[in-house]
Structures are given as C-alpha cells and as structure tokens.
Amino acid sequence: MLYTRTLFFKLESEIETKEVTVITGMRRVGKTTALLHLYDLVQSKNKAVFDLENPLHRKVFEEENYDAVWSNLQQFGITNTEKAYLFLDEVQNLPEVSRVVKYLYDHWNVKFFLTGSSSYYLRNLFPESLAGRKIIFEMFPLTFAEFLIFKHVQRNAPATFAQKAKDKNKISYDLLNPYYREYLEFGGFPPVVLEQNPERKKILLSEIFTSYFEKDAKNLADFKDMSKLRDLILLLIPRIGSRIEVLKLATGLSISRETVYTYLAFLEQTYFISLLPRHSGSVDRQAAGSRKLFICDCGIANILGKPAEGQLLEQSIFQNLRSDHKLSFYNKDGGTEIDFIADGKVALEVKMTASQRDITTLRLRAESIHLTERYVITSRYSEKEEIIVATDM
Image (cartoon, rainbow, N blue to C red; front, side):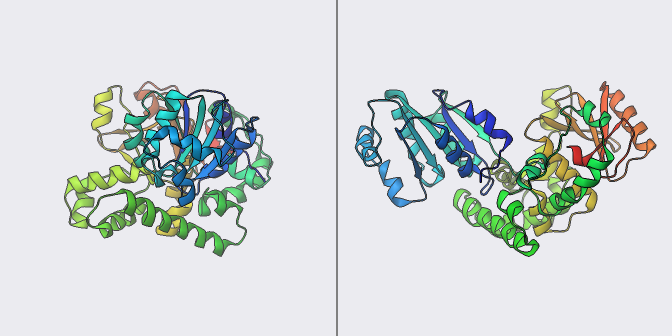
C-alpha cells in the first residue's frame, strides 16, 4: 500500500521536466518508495529502474564509452529513439555514475530520477558534474501529519499558525494525543511507524542507526578514530534543543575543536543532526553565532539516550516544521531565548504546559525583535488563542 507523503506532490510535478530529479536523505526514510511511485506514474513504456546496490545493475553504467551504455540499456527494453525515463536508486554505490548521467543528459532525450542516502556524498560529487542540470529534494522521517496517514487516522488540522491557534478542538486533541505520545517515543521512520510491536520498533530503530554508522559514516567519512564520532553522537543526545558548545565537547572527548567542527559538519551533511542558526537581522552575525542542536528523529534520540520530556517535545516540533519553514532561534546575551523563529517572522515557544506568564513572556521577547506573530506550542490542551497544541502541528 502506498502512503502519501507531502513531498510526493512536488516530485510528481517534476516528471516531465528536463532536469535530473535527485531525492536525498537518510536511509529508511522512504526514498525508494518515492522513486517507485514516480516510476508507476510515468506513462511511457520506455522506462526502467536500476538498484545500484546490485552489481549487475551497476555494470550497465560502467562503460568507458558512455554511448555504449545504450547497448546495455537495451537489455532492459530501453531505446534512445524516444524519450527515456531512467530511475537510479542508491547512487552513492557508484560514484562514477554522475558523469554518465551528465553525458546522457546532454546528448540524448532522457529524464533521470536519482536517489542517494547521503547529502554529504551528493553535495560533494554533483556540484561539478551536474551543475545547472539537477534539482535536489530532501526527504525526512515523517511529520506528525504523515504519521497519521500511515496510521489511517483522519485529521483536519488548520494550515496556518493563526488558524491552528484559533480553531482548536478538545475532542480532536483527545483522539490524537495517544498517537502523538507514540510519535514522541518512536519517531517517524516509515518502517518503525508501520511496525505494531513496540519491542520490534526498538530493534528497527537500532538497526537504522547501525546502518547509518556502519555504512554512511564509515564508508563516506575519512576519520581516523570512528569511536570518537560515536562518542560525540552520544554526547549530543542530552543536548537536543540546546546551543552547541564546541569547547566543552572537545574537552569531554579529548580532541581538538577543529575535529569537533569536522564531525559536526559531517553529521549535519548526512542528515543525522540539524544545527539551527541564531536569528539576526545580519546574515554575517547569524552565520557566526552558536547554533542550536536537533537530531534526525525522536525515535533515534530515545534509542541512543534518555532525553527529557520537554526536549522530545521540542525535537518533535522541529521535525514538523523543518520541511516547510526556514528555522532559526533567538537568543540574547543573558539567556533570553525563543525556541523557533519560522521564516524570520513567527515566534514559537515550546512548553509542556503553557501558563499566562509564558504567553506574556513570549510576547515581550517577540516584540523586542519586532515580531508581531507569536504562539506557545504545548502538549497540553488549552483554549487560549495564543496557544497551539502539538497534535495540530
């Protein structure tokens, strides 16, 4: 059964475009499913899917003379006499394929769809070979809205922040809250969401992390001591929702600050962590400031450590916002903070239970940086118009 993802609508609009469509993200987020969905939508019979984890499929593209690739494609029913649609899954298994794709793209009428499990790989390889020829789409674990689709639960959540705050419904909240509890505990990786047994969910989450560390980290990174990278990951879990203090991390691991920066960059570029910039009217100041940490998924956080309940709630809100909004956070010297600034104009504070004092404090902080729209997001139901309940995110 195909479960609809929000990204599908954008991908579907790319079917008849010329540019190479690239889908990237962590392992097990649903990239192959998206690729096969697009394959099914293509009306032409001049199409084929290649799994580049399969040595026989890799061999199709391993030709010194790229024109000779067409002879190999004929074995899969593909001709160059009409437009061809080629779907290549897991392209990180054949680094040279980008040159083949570029050549065929430039000389023939062919539409490519590619998936790869590492942004680190794709961004380092593709900029030169496919400059101006590709559009990259990032796929993440499920948002809560997508999670409910996978659970066959209908929800009519308002679209805007203002509508979410205004149009709350207690009956809907009571219905959805148990699902949000599950989302907080096990996250949004599709195979984990579809698994019914809680113990097997934990096993799947452990396997997802192991696959990331053993395949992506070890194969893509050129780090001398992988144990330090592992130890850094474990140190990051208790810091979810907090600003990164590189010196403390370096001291705790007995490594240099430069090495910590290198590790963090790798973890971010392979989608394992996200580092939010500090909100500022100056791009230079924003780039230079300390950044706030989130990881890929609540379920992974729970497998690797024991985040506090408030940290998990903030992590889940990040997961629901990251695909559709440009996020930053506000911090003023002395400790004043706003958890999220969405698209540079909406202030969002996350609280387990929101009081009138929380609402007033957020208003004052938002006004100090000239933001007129602000909401407190909470896991507890409240009728106050300044509050959004997490189940509506």
